[in-house]
Image (cartoon, rainbow, N blue to C red; front, side):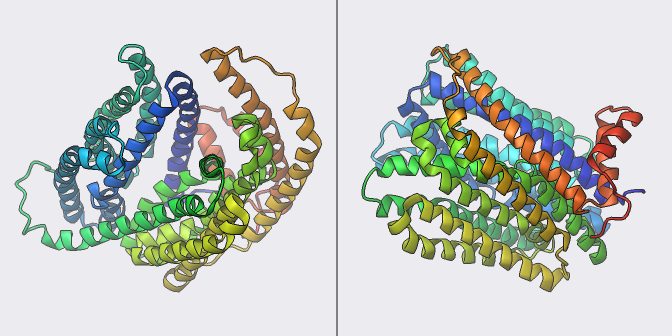
Length: 548
């Protein structure tokens, strides 16, 4: 069976994104341990506080141009309108560069006011340093967005991986020379983005060979493009703001309603909900390449292929997220206790609820991305507003009675509401058909969850009392201690994944094209043809007559 062009491109892009995500997650794991052991807690908090403010400023720094490029460039290339695509690229580079410089200068001069507002004078020098980071990070975003628009996911993945490895290298290089404080963390963080920016520019030289970025820029001649792109970008800014509202409202309301141990409860909730993000470690790899692919198809007016590729993307998203969600939900107590200590185990139910909510969100992610490809981002705004209002209303009711568990349950339902809204509009505007196999896929996940929950009950006491004392207080042994304990949990994750694979085959959830894609990916890693067939037979028991 020959794959259609869009499926082949999406498969290749997903593969490179998965590799990048694994490198990023592992590097972040090591980075967190390093700064926790080498830097005082107050300095770490100051660094992340400053980075949070820079992140909020960054939402407005490029007016959503990075996302607009991903949508509009492939759309016009699909319509054979290369001249317009080139104009959009020039507009994004010129206008984006000007916006990020203004954003950096504004942050630099407002650093004192921010520090005064938060009654934190130590924040000022950190913000002045990180104001430069705003320009660097915005440039990194524009460069990666251009590569995504041209579907160069291998280069994007390599850039992200390089940045995360350099983050560790620059930290170790500077922390022993400049001192272990927030300013050193800020400088190391900035430097980790500079080399990847040069690499991304180098990789863009071929895709941009026909684009004269240095051409004289006339705002009047670009006004028709600006009228379409800037409202799209500002809508993206609004969506991000509502997304942040959903992410941070629960913590603010916890701080308002809880009467005792407020900071400790918020810390437990933050750690627990952050770990739930691992549900999309592989599923999130599908969406970056899916947007330019579906945008190009929409530009061609091929709605039938849009539906086909959307259903394929949704199946891949569910395949890669369901077993991880089942493991996190069933092993939530052990995960928090083993990785973070007994004090964090109280967040077990919050972790389970938030992991389920993340899975609900994933079920609507493909529909949301397809609607964005149709330039219907106002629908995503509607979805975010509905989710934010649901989250706030439920938090008002549930937090006073159930604390962090009520907050996590509220977020879970809010994610569900957003998915329903996105699915409704995808059916209305795209004629999107929800694959019936997804329900059987969810059944397989529920069965895996039930089995793993039983195993967790049986092994809980033995695992927490495991005589594993390899940490002697040194940095190396501290890292090793975490790695070994994580490996033990990974054994149970692998067991759940194996059971899920068995159920997926028994329920005939794989399509024949899934086997073709899998074999092609193995081939890209240099696996001989004979071994490709053997591995494929072990994974896909019968892919010849599966139903959708």
